[in-house]
Length: 193
Image 1: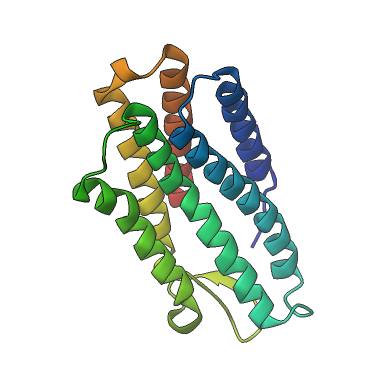
Image 2: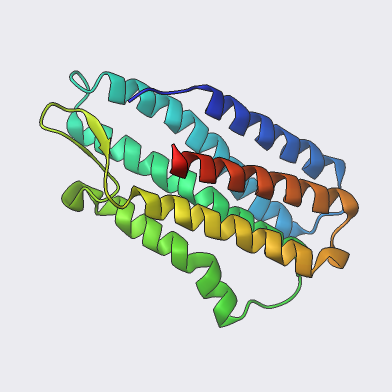
């Protein structure tokens, strides 16, 4: 499996753009700040784990299989948590003091829960990824579910932004639209390639 480091570089650049926008606006509510910090930690963590797992996958003959599974599962959970946390962040920015409905909880956490269960059971099912007898890393038949989940969160965040555009500043709308559209395009690209 060939690894292209440019994706991590692009992800770090987008994250830096969001950090700049975040710190340029000191009027952000405490709830939104907390969600943002969690999202930032997950994004940075997933980038770091991605780089680590590239090494462990490329050296799978010398890295214990259990460690490879644990690192890759942790990476995928962090990576796939970012779109869900982003969706929660957008929702909190739009409605910071409005109590969450049951539907909002399900729509925010349901797909992520499915992702986490699929990732944690991949050791047994090989649904998301697996290592062959020759210790070669392979994607499982359900890997596309993770992309569909991320796609869902990005579309949902974009729709929330469009519906409630008057509750966001111009710069917030720009960042949400830029980040959402950019991510949607990259998800589509990864699904097609």
